[in-house]
Amino acid sequence: MFDILLVEDNAGDIRLTQEALKEGAVPHVLNVVTDGDEALKYLFKEPPYTQVSSPDLILLDLNLPKKDGREVLARVKAYPELRRIPVLVLTTSNADSDIMKAYDLHANCYITKPVDFNSFIEVIKAIEKFWLTTVRLPTRL
View (cartoon, rainbow, N blue to C red):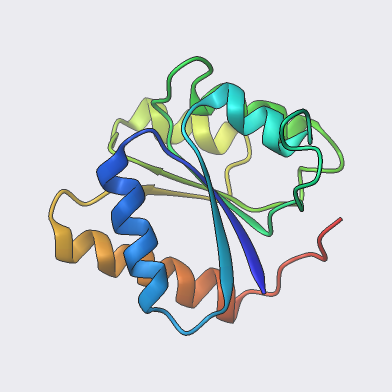
């Protein structure tokens, strides 16, 4: 069973991601937080997230309230016990500066969210196929 953390503030994108993953064949748990502060509390197992499992995969939006995705990514990759978790940046920005910054902060990949429904669903299915069936992920802590 794969544990996925979705860090996303857009309710529509959350719903689309949930639906796309629900159609997939890979057993998973999708946990959702909607801002950067909550993401860090979740990942560092601070209240109210003291009993959560570390995720196998993080889907991270860049433009988040409170702490943005760049800050979350920097903290995750700076912390030895979290840095092995693949972080997939999934955002609306296709700016070269955002792409470069994300990779400088050691994002595992950068995906620009498609604007239409069918393309968004296909991207999520491709993420599932590659990251949850093809790639061998590190053992969870």
